[in-house]
Length: 361
Ligand code: CO
Ligand code: ZN
Image (cartoon, rainbow, N blue to C red; front, side):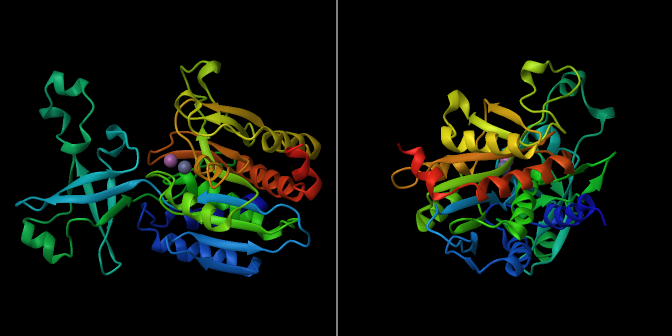
C-alpha cells in the first residue's frame, strides 16, 4: 500500500464515523485507539477532549496540537402527528446542501436509523418557489413512520443527534470526497504526524470536541494543559472553482498546506503569532514542502480559543485546503494532507528552547 492509500484508510474511518458536536462518543473511541500505540499516555478530560501525550527529552516548550473531532449536524427538535421530524442545525449549515439528503439519526440504544430530508417535487413548485432556497426551519425528515406513535416506537425522541449518511469515496488521482472532512482531514493529519514525531519538549495532541459550536473543547483543554505554543489543524476554503477569480480563491486544492496568517471577520478570529507563522514558513522552505499563505475573511479555528488562554499562547494553524466545506461533498487532496502532516511534525521538532526564548526577546 502506498502512503496515500494508508492515509486514505485512516481518513475513511474518521470521515464515516458519527460525531456531531456534543455527541462525539463514536469518533472518540476510534481516535483513542489510533493514538494509544504511539503515546506515553492517552486521557479523556471532563469535557470529552482526547489528550495524547508524548514526552520530550528536554525543557523545550510544551506544544499543543488541536484538531476537532466534532462535525456539524442536526438535533431532532419536533415530531409531528404524521411522524415527520423537524431539525435544528448544530453548526453552520446552508439549507440548499441539506435538502434532499439522507440523514443518519442516532438512537439512545446507539443504533442508527435513516431518514430523508423531503422536498416538494419540481412539478409542484411555483416559479416563485423555484427561485428561492428552501428554509432550514421548514425542512422535515421522513423516516418512513406513519404517525408520531410509530416514530416514538422506533426510538425517536426530541434531542437525538443526526449527521449526513455519506461515505468517503475517491475521485481522480489523490482527491477524495465525503462528509465531515472539516475536520476529520485535520484530525487524520494530526494522528498521522503523531505516529513518528519526535518533539523536543512535551507534546499534547488534543482531539477536541464542540469546535463547530464555539471552539469550546479547545478552550477548556488549553486551560488544563497550559501550553507554551499551539498549532491547530483544520481545513480552509479552497475556492478555486469555475467563475471564481484568483483574488477570491483563499487557497488552491493541491497547492500544499495553507499556513494561516489570520482569519475571521475583520480578522477577529486568530492573528497567527508572527514567530509561529515564520517558523512554519521557514520549515516548509527548508524541507521543500509546497505551501500557500492563507488569509480567511470568515470562520476561524481552535487556535483562536487557545491563543486567548491565561496570559496568551503563541499560536498558528496549518490548514488543509478543502472545497465545498460544510456540505456532504467536501473534497480534499490526499497529497495536501500528507504534506500538512510532514510540515506539522518537522515544525514541532524545530521548536527548541532557544527558538522559544528568542520569541520574547
Ligand atoms: Co467547520
Ligand atoms: Zn473545522
